[in-house]
Image (cartoon, rainbow, N blue to C red; front, side, top):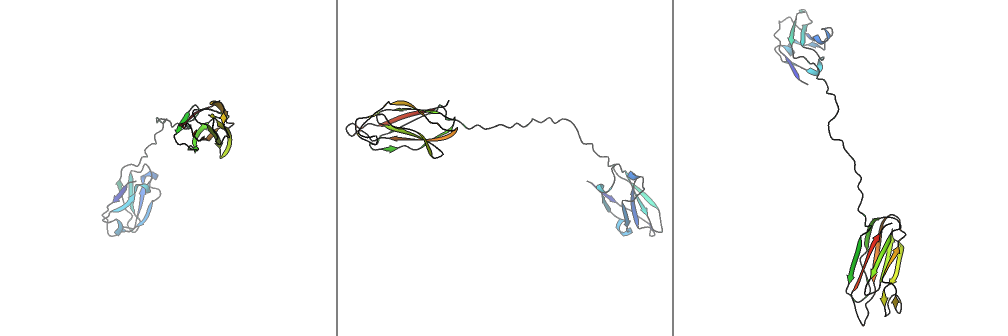
Length: 215
């Protein structure tokens, strides 16, 4: 939009005034009833939005006793064509984030205390259904228990070797390595590892490891 100012020096008998444009052949005024005091000496202001595209002349027409007119040239309002064509920007692509998986990840820890001990819960994330927990125990018995959605889905019970009494009973003698089918749904599980008390006559550090293997 631009502003058009009209300045006019008129005779005493002129006015009121109407404004015409050559864009429609001066057939219909686009402003009517302008008082002489509004346009003489001016400026009388109109917006370019008030006139037709292609208009290059505005005619000020007196409509009273005197019917003279005067034409004012203005810059033509030829519309600027809208550019067309094919956009050249780089298309936007959408990627899907896949969270990391603990399939194949190993965990291990030790405990030097002499009493029963429950390790911090181990969060195992984004594993496949029916995965396997391959476990190893060393100098003291351990128990591996798996939970999903706060429900126990698998446990080794106490495993390892102990010639003394503990939570497992009077003594314990099992394999020190093994595989625990978890029968889990795909997603996340929590593994709880527990250490049995040390042998009072030969106290040793607890040590264990496990690996999650997905089908």
